[in-house]
Image (cartoon, rainbow, N blue to C red; front, side, top):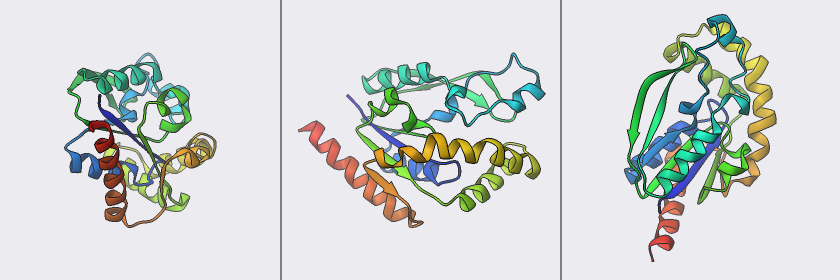
Length: 203
């Protein structure tokens, strides 16, 4: 049975960087919750732009939990691929084989009890709103084809209020809370704890 490690935090908090570094350390699968946004291909482009993608309802939780449990129990999954520019799922699937440690990351991971309960370790990446916005602005313009104006409007309308409602309140449920900028140190702390858990599982 694999260890599932959940890394949560607001958009732009550094959770993905942390997850990638920890996954690289263990040569582990990295499963992003972002890949499981519901498909909005049935909506017009203007209607898709109005969807609140920072609300828990925007994610296919049922499929995500199914895939988490399959990976944990040693089975392959077919992860969906989401196109953030068009707000639709593509026809592609990524076949993922389980590894002894599986890193899972996403902004809304901890607000779902059925997801929280599968993790052997929960890590929360805390970060000031100003810094999260700056990082989100850079990413969405460079990688997702958004305009600065649309990013600012979305952050004010949904990202910030949804963070306050569905992300930040679950901070204290994490066994490790990281609120500093020393990423190498945070990675070291998380990896040490994962290694302790793995040792306990294997002996």
